[in-house]
Length: 198
View 1 (tube, helix red, strand yellow):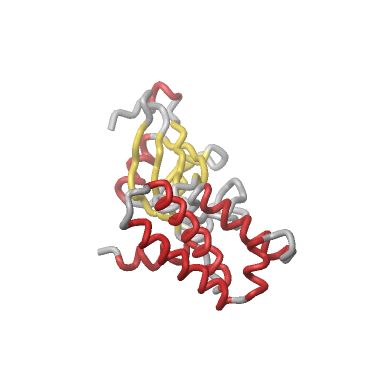
View 2 (tube, helix red, strand yellow):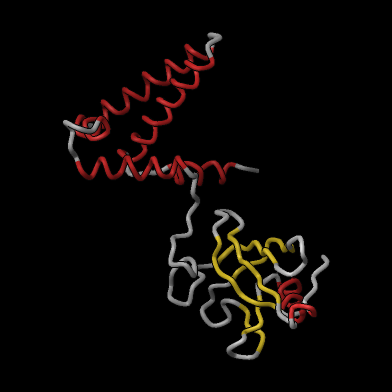
């Protein structure tokens, strides 16, 4: 690893990223000694500018950052450290120093889950298809998932990719609704899949 700490006045910024969720947890600074201690102990250690000493994240709270990997950027003057956090990262008790929840985000799918939740809460079944499904109950939602699954299977056997993708989108949409009707989200299913990984 070619890191030029000396030309950075003895300190180099270290961006800490959760190795699983890929969320940025915090930013700290390292000197050569804290970088070496991080590698040796496998616990992320910084140089505290306010305390003027080495500081292992979690040394008082127990909320350590367990080292997974260290990468340096193209200029060799910034580190990207992937870690597994043990508890919240911020001293305020928040998951991140940006006061954000540290959970996996699936981009558009996560936004769609939020939209489904809002439509369910607003419960305007005359204006919202989603609200109308929740009003009809779990049996109707489960039935829709079954219907969409059959349609995906039928389209998979044909040669029309557009119809196959359209039916796949319908299945995923209704499955996300079913998950929320059961009190779950996609993250819960991903957790089960991760446990099965060998």
